[in-house]
Length: 97
Image 1 (cartoon, rainbow, N blue to C red):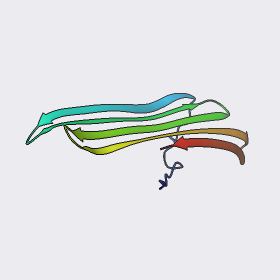
Image 2: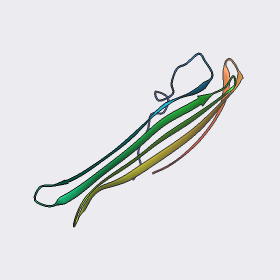
Image 3: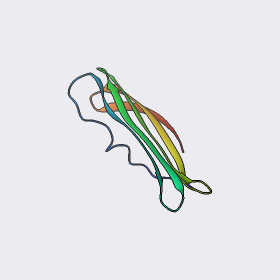
Image 4: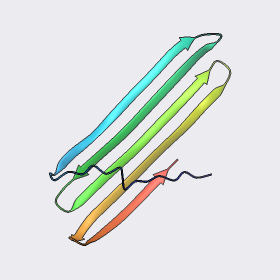
């Protein structure tokens, strides 16, 4: 199985160089009929210089109870973009899920 990710909408549009991004971390412990645990972690970080753009997207989600694992997923995407001319860019990326 595979996941389709539209990365072009994920780059921050900025006119300055430097870092931009966000990071979220969350977890929940609880008990209803049984004990459960939920964990989520997401990152969206970008670094821009005059000619280069680095983009990292990542997420980890886990929901489990004493006996079952309901969600266990992770995703990481790294993208590098280099401006050769105003109308020409070189781009490389990798991702794992």
